[in-house]
Length: 275
Image 1 (cartoon, rainbow, N blue to C red):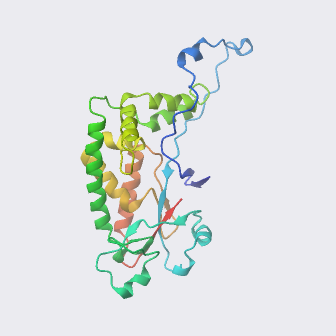
Image 2: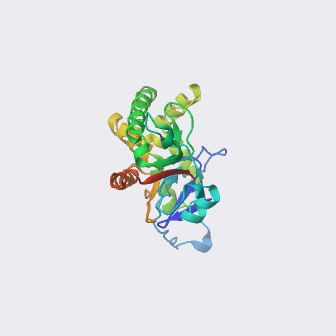
Image 3: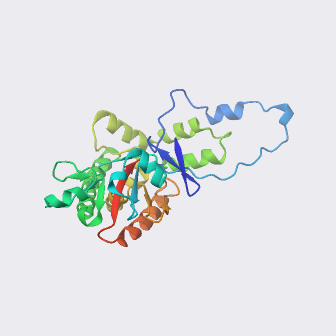
């Protein structure tokens, strides 16, 4: 299911990279060997309009208007009030040393240290701690990634293959694009590492472009997305989303979302919605 935001569909669930096709994709040699249809000989195929791959949206940060009561934050009310067909998710951390009387201001507060919650006033959310922890974890994952891909050349990220497919889906099918992406030595090295080291926290081929930007850049990327998610809905109904999964578009979104986050007053309420 998809939802259109600013003329861009929000992809719900799934990975940013498709699985390798079960059946072999048609090769370029086979495609060139195919005989043309005499009835269409001499005709140029109609050009396909340029298309940009839709971004993958897992988590949207919603800035709640003041007139929305906390009791209205249920799954069906989210769709009614904000047009967001999702569910609340424990994305944020509560600030350390939370007072007992402050707990009722947080949404879906859970036990633990740090205490996760679905949202609440900015003053009660440990956004700084979230960013710091995400950066530390990203630094460790980048070191693992460097060891996993050592000796391989930089690879072309999936959004480039997807854009080429969308530009001419007849001549470059989706299955061929997926096969070409997965055939790259660096992608194969990442997949082999994940296969032999199962478990959470392994480098994801969906973030290939982010890893290739460098260790510090990847830490900045993960620290920022820890607090702004994949998309943002402002209190006045403005939707901020990346134009695609390409790193440049993701960075543009991060810049816009962080600027908006910096303008919020301490009482402003935020919630995280899983799409």
